[in-house]
Length: 108
Length: 170
Image (cartoon, rainbow over all chains, first blue to last red; front, side, top):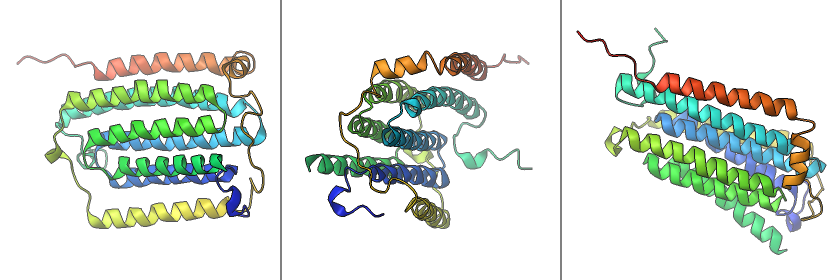
């Protein structure tokens, strides 16, 4: 990046790098963890990184529209967490475990 | 000068607590670190002058969604021995994949945008309740109403999914 080290904290691409790092950490968690609750939490982390990126671009363009989109993403994330956790409870009732390796009946 | 130091400290603490979410073995510890991460993300919102979103983030995420996660976690009563562990090959390959994704995203964004513009704190009032409310109830009023329908559908779906089926007595 062309920004010098004097304004690395106040330039907006620092926040872009933070958002990308959060997204990558969430993707790494989705790939490695096998607990379904932790997987859902990693998805929430990725959604939050996208929110951070939208707020950064809202600051860059001086427009309030991306912050409204962040509001809608929060709404969708709440609905997604509700439905995902109820699916998890139903899966736990069937298998007495929330290991994702056990839920592969659709494969065969 | 001090603002740079504050934003660097907050950003690195955000990344560190997000790493602790993924790396900690116990699920309850992951939930606690995720709440900490959300607080740090809210502090980054405040640095970018988006006060309303910072408060909404704390109320909705740290207040509602994380309590739901914690409630389910304590309801299922998962002890540590039930926690499965992925193999070292899976861990290594997913580390390589995630690092590759990070490099590709950084390289794609390297010289495209945000080259020299720095933000000036407290120069605009776009992140306040008044500004966002005006936009939400004028330009984006139809998506706002549609999101309420989405909420009703999610509520009905959650009740329907989590309801215990009628037991067959034999």
